[in-house]
Image (cartoon, rainbow, N blue to C red; front, side, top):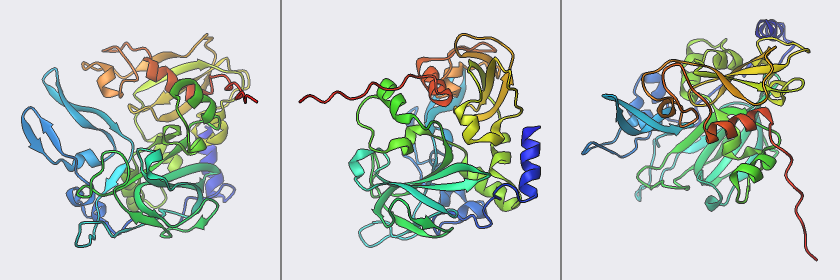
Amino acid sequence: MFRFLALLLALAGLLPAQPADLRLPTENHFLFSNEPDKFFMYVDRTFEGATSKPWQAGSFGLVRNALRINGEVICTKFHEGIDIAPMQRDKAGNPLDTVCSIAAGRVVHTSPIAGRSNYGRYVVVEHDWQDSPVVSLYAHLSEIKVKPGDAVEAGSPLGQMGFTGAGITRTRAHCHVELGMLMSDRYEDWHKKFSGGTNYHGIYNGLNITGCEVSRFFSERRADPALTFPAFIASTPVYFKVTFPTAGTPDFVKRYPWIATARDPGAKSWEMGLSATGMPVSFAPGKQVVAAPIVTAVRPSSIPHGYLTRGLLPGQGNRATLTRSGSQLVALLTGDFPPAAPAIHKP
């Protein structure tokens, strides 16, 4: 009901509309000509003694680390974005493509020191879509041409394609692009409890961005310009549901109000629907009393769920629980973690 109301408000102009101008971030438009092998950057693969360069490994989802399970070949490693191949190179093989913003927005983070992230040099742009902060991320840049606070339009240059970051070579130079939602405004507290190390990126750390299938969004939006980001997220299949205790409306729902299927001030808990990759698809208030997050539904599978959910769920068939990483993801999405202890400065 709430999503329907949000749609009516958007049509009436009472909520910010989707961007009129949405563009791919480089001059590589082979996504739209049904030539994915020219659009996605391949990954070198050796599987059962055979070597290959599958372009699919540059697309979104569980597309890497092929395994044969119960006679079926599946991929188990999650790639949370798309890798766009270069259109131009110099004589040395360096990419020359300019990387641009996909839509109007504001630069909220830049990481100019390549060694501070597996992304290498990267830029994050925030877009105000349906009164919520949707972010796009552009990684492995050789050069950054913007700074935080800069306003950008669709097609505004952000930097130049490169091959900075972990495991990227000049031959496989590409632009890694993500489009997603911020999981928590308190990421630093979560990072100190569960991740450790220094967080150089504030809430724009890649671990705090839950990415959607950005190439599918581009293709479906091209076919239907009226498609909204909330409607696209709602179309993503739910793989499992988690019911968790909370007092009041979860912060994630406050940030993305269109993701709630209903509202209930008297809710005892909320049920969150998640995709196979762990992206929230829906939130619904409930009456069930739970002491801690529990898996309340899962898509039946003859293959162990861990292989199909990047290790978020153990179990098989119609039974599943949360692994340690699954519990940490749910904690980040629901805010179920304590504030970090203040740093102690010795005199």
